[in-house]
Length: 601
Image (tube, rainbow, N blue to C red):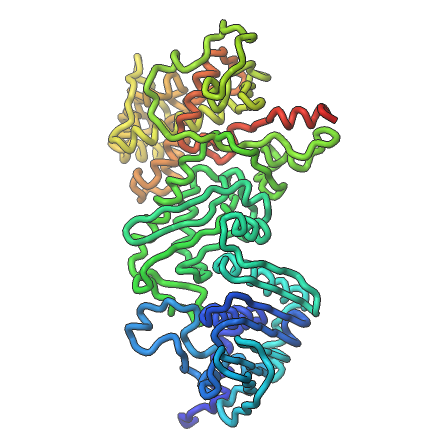
């Protein structure tokens, strides 16, 4: 066949295939235009999930009458004028393709009025980019775009759409996500003439929290940490959920680059890395995060629908995100602010006790909040005194004068070792229950990490070397990584084809089972692959080692031992979760106790 130019409408329909996937795609493009127009209020009307009608009205700057034909032409835009502009895109829309692409697969009308004009003007389009009809109309300052009968002339595309309810669900989700990028704009959403969502502009902190809670739920706001960190010309701010507040799906992960909602694998990997040793297996973190950076350092022209970006220096961005989130999560320690609520969905597994599980259990008539983990205002400090000086003397009389807030440490003082598993402690405001093994595991893990980061893990020679029988492959692995194991505090030498001698173990692990420890470490190395350097698998190995050095369940602890562990938890990063992401403690306030026993009723 001969080469020929395609007619404009077919060109626009091809472009529409890249830009418009479903009604939500149309809403996204038109909302971005409203943002660029300086709108302070946006109304979205949808009928039949967007198939019959999508109408978006804004109070932005409007479009001059003589520019209306250009607005509906391909590659015509007010956002860029040169290559330099394209390399520093700061607007939401810039391609100049959305309106002509949409008009080629729907019946589009655009009504607009600039502030200084006495009348508004309406233009109709069919995707042909010719014979535009422009007529006067009544309209306040701003622009309304009506898109009717989506895909009416491309029935094959229409067949791929879902039910009206499903398609509207995509519109609703998109609008809520975009509303989190522009707190300064008010949003209203109606479906089939019924109001579904109304958000006022949120300038203050309280109003922003209200919008965040409306979009993500009250539980997220109550279980979120505020992040605000800047370095190397980058700034990350927003909210990240506590590790114990996670979800089975990645449906509450909102990331914005220069206020643009994006999906990016580099960002996802950096966030997962920051959560990797505090999040329960298979769970997804929740977050609403904003990355501000020089527009010249990010290419927003990497995807036709502008859903993906490409960073000029991906390694810098990855390390910045990992470091910023790591700092925020490392500071999660017991803190006395209002108890944190939890949602049933944040329960990782029903096979172990989680504070969130209690949210769905009626503990007592009239109770409205389960015992929960909250945060205590502590800064990570290296212990300055020996453990024996950190606990409250057991002989201190219980009827001493009233305690002051300063005299009570955040996790309180140990009262009992319940079932030889849980530490029960009295705090100034209630009770705390601690899983001793999980807590000690985290404390040991963080100490091992600090030692490893500082050089080598301190080792302790065994009185008699231990001969361990292994498979030949395991013995080869131990020999291959002998130097790396030594840096982890394990001194291992080969003593035969299928045997090694363990001469020293990490001093922090004390009298741990050296054979079981070695086997677990070799299993971790094998899992991470022979070709990987131990440094890349170090944290997984250290976590496995820490488990061996932690107090065992059913081992009876003395009151001084329990108090010493509580004091160490208060000074340890990430002490709210064990190495596997399970919570280490829960709190029951005196208000909770009063509700359980109906006091004051």
